[in-house]
Image (cartoon, rainbow, N blue to C red; front, side):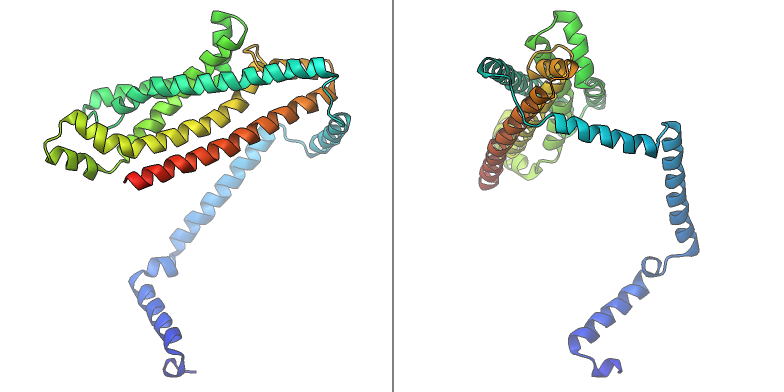
Length: 293
C-alpha cells in the first residue's frame, strides 16, 4: 500500500515522522557511542548496587528469617489494647502533646524562616555575599536531622516536650527558609513591576505584588509540614523529647505488643485526620491564590 492510498491522517502523521527523523537523526537513530554510554552507565550503577549490598552484608537467608520474625511480631500485636481506660487517657494525653509539639514547631519555624526566605531570594536581595551566606546558613541548619537536634536540645534543656518543640523549630527552620526563598524567586515579576510602574514604593510592590503570590504557596507548605511533623514528633519522643513516642518506646522494651499496636493505630488515625484537614485547607489556599492572580 503506497502513501497515496493511505488515510490522509495516517499519511500526514508519517510525513511528520519522516520530517522529525530528518531533523533530529540522533534521537531516532542514536549513535553507537551514545548506546555504549547508556550501557556503561547501567553496568556501572548495577556494579555499584552489588558492591553496596556486599559491603552492607546483605543476606537473603537473614531477610527471609527476619520476615518470619516480623510476622510473629505482628501476630502478637493482635488485638490492639491499651490495658484499660486509665492507660488510654494517658496515651491520649501523650498523643495530644505530640500534635501540640508538631504544631508549635512548624508555626514557630515558619515565622522565623519567613524573613530569611527574603534574604536568600536572589530577586529580593541581589547582593551576592548576603545571598551566599544566607543560603549556606540555611543549608547548615537543614543538614542536621531533627532526631540529632532532639538529642542536642534534650542535653541542653532536659527531657520533655520543650526539647521536642525546639528540635522541630530548628530542623524546620532550615527547610522552610529554602522553600520560602524558592517560592519568592519563582514569583511572577510582572505584578511587582506593575505596582512600581504606578508609583508604588518597594514595600508596596512586595505587599501588593509579591505577597499575594507567595502566601498561598507558603501556607500550603506549612500545612504539609504540620502533617509531616506529627510523625517526626513521634520519633523524637523516643529519645526523651516528649509526646507519645516515649510511651511507644517503653511498651516495645517491655514487650507489650498489644499496647504497641494500639499506640500505632492512634498515631495513624491522627495523621490521617490531619492529612484530610490539611489537604482541604491547602486546596482552599491555592484556589484563593489563583483567584487573586
